[in-house]
Length: 555
Image (cartoon, rainbow, N blue to C red; front, top):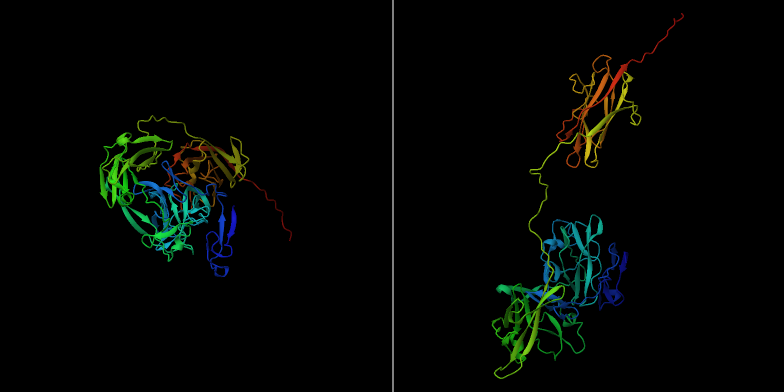
């Protein structure tokens, strides 16, 4: 549900309401209930227990098909994961916002740490510009509540005040024994997005430990990272053991559930390389089962070459249909190469039927790749033919008042000296969102010729020449410009007056087009497109005559 939800643990359990542990009484419950606020999404159809398959084999509950050291097999993510230890991911970190998880090559499951403390992803809104990034990623829904449960959960990115500004790709989350989670992180949609880490009161303080090295293609070795949880009793780790199972440990650190009569594990390890498929057999385990790992061959008995390393016997085959009996099938999503190892009993001098160990490598038919070159498109005008269009249509009008609604008709107009001239200029241009008109110069002459050298400037360099006599009403903000000016004898006599204005179009996306005028004249460096000067007039000046009558004053 959307809105505010207060979560608490029932009597006999302790926690914040989303994670509750048994063995505590209400009196000992010192963890505060958690209030969760959710805006998006309002439901999570993916929040359900999921199961995975690996090739033709279906994984058991709590397992996923994980590629570890090139080996694709059903494995427990709680035991095979990569440690993610970045202090900048903390939800309390508001320093630095340039970390981006799109640059990380995510592979498999990850367990989050800050220092030596195990932490988890937040499942409530995180403010933007936290966690060392611009758009922090948080779980839109609570993590799984049952131990060994894997769910797919939506992930939200907070940005610009929106808790779920965009939904990132969903991830898989597993709840592990020992009260921690592992996350199957994927590449987020862009930069700067990064997964957040929240330090809760219920996390343990485990330490990561590395285990065995496994040979993979091209003689490389990689390290499998497994969990080591600080705990004093096996019960804490094996609370999920079933009837007839015993909690056992090899090193006193990593615990597992096992039946006393459980057979020796004979499943081979498979390395699915790009050009070779390698199969590894545990020599000790097979000898305990009466099998000789060094006597095996593939479907083609001539393919029996092997190498021994670290107690493992490795066979390899070219990843090609027909090589050593390989078969190739597709299921719409994967190309599946399959073969089988045939292993003989000890001793193998007599005729015996070998044990068959089939194996497969599934290669996705879909792939993603990114070009490491930034492409900046531009329009090439080389050898282009350039034509010359007509100038922009424009007009200049004299108005009765400063509301610029009622215009004087074209022709002459007679006005008294000292009158206010209200002048408007407009331009006919289709790019209304791109260009604005700017008055460059406005001047008065005694002839209709705008090239007349005898001029009296009212506006020069985009600003009034005399602020007491000229007021700019609008200039450089739209496709019209307006000003008001006092009418005087500009040339000292009562001849007709013609007003002319030189204007230009300015690209407001590229430049600041509105002039800033002070008592000093404005000098512009903004590139503009000059237009043909406009003229209004003639304007004839006259005096208003007022008669005064007097009479003698009687003494």
